[in-house]
Length: 164
Length: 139
Image (cartoon, rainbow over all chains, first blue to last red; front, side, top):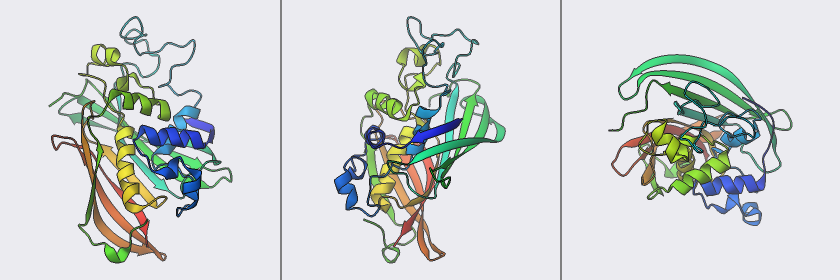
């Protein structure tokens, strides 16, 4: 993933905070935010993940004219093995880590650069062979300063995770 | 509001209920805000018939985001220096989640006081769905 321009905006922060059920006014009330220690609206701790919105090639967003693997007339818009994004949806998020060098605020304009990390395999009890892959994303601000370092681990499972 | 080193000791806990009876609509809301439109989280037909799961399930990042709310309520706004998790079980519509942060260490690095926390979120059956850590600046 490479995101050339991720503008951090007030209304996006407000919507993101709502979606995680966080009604802390620092995320939606600039007047209140002035009275807090940061002194401004800031982004919630996992907000950087929404850089996906600004990745032009993000595979988990339907795009006009491209096949989409979610349902329409049929349970999937693509046939097995045809590709078209997340395939059968077998990829799951296994881990996520953030290091905050400073917190994001409206007006920041970030870039995100992702570097591939390790890959490894494990035999899982509930889902067959697991293939893990790691990536590190550096978020830099409008001054080129590193603001957040994110490390994600994805896992592809051989079969759906069995439910207990 | 922020935490004071002098008020904290290893083993102290802070718990919050993150959500009661998680609704599918909240998964839609999170998909829209985050930009992660994986149908596994919003498209029941696809998820049951093609992916082979009993229903749609929550984005791991939604659970991490809700758990983050517990953390920022505890340590204060703009105070986190690190936050990382493993997603250990899936979260389903109808789940009720509770999260706990436990102090594992107190330190001072270059004049900055820090607290280290162990973070665990469990569902209504006591099954751990998220396990991780956080670090925050304290006074």
